[in-house]
Image (cartoon, rainbow, N blue to C red):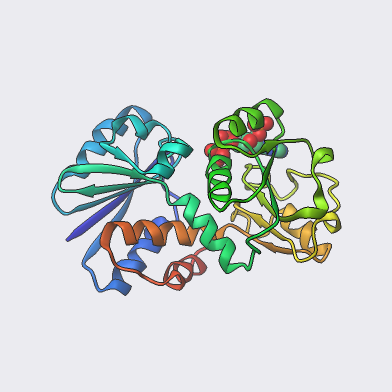
Length: 267
Ligand code: ATR
């Protein structure tokens, strides 16, 4: 029996068990994926458990993505640069920290038909924004970072590249991609990271991508669509980061539709 885990706090409402159980079934593997509530103080001991035979690894979520860095044997280039691990891979007693949020975002954007060229804007300067900026910079994109607290955007861009800005400083007509990586709109249908924004100022054919998927349509997405702009929620990124974690653990390429199907069956 193969085993994988989610370590998070809280962990109860995670969509990862449904996705990975569907993936084990689609891959024809005997596997079990369990979401465990792991308080901060118990993370080191919980990570040690991943070295046991039969354990593939774990996904990490709030509040463990940054704290895990110090407890792993190796880090991928993405995990090291972003400073966050969302997937721990166990091989023969060694633990490697990987970040599949960044390539998961790029895969979701490609599927949503985001043009590779053009400038991008990332909203936010927390962990999710770090993954987004690193991913878009790795594609060679010019990236503007806008954050409610400007100093945090400046610190992020010093680290990862891109340019901190305020809305008035962005050449919106050249922007083909707007990514919300802030938590504005998360669980709150009245909150938006860009109040009063004129979405028609974006380049023709631009895509608005909100990493938020709860609710499925945020105010940002609703306002973009009302202005006739293409807009997608974060379910695609969620599914792709899971697909890439499963691939790293098992070597089995399960189609993203299996993961999306498991999400559609959930509220
Ligand atoms: P995560 O790791 O998920 O990115 P985080 O580190 O708490 O979470 O970062 C949340 C981000 O959302 C921050 O950039 C935050 O802005 P501040 O740096 O000013 O705190 C942003 N954010 C949260 N609520 C917001 C709101 N209502 N409007 C705009 N930005 C918001």
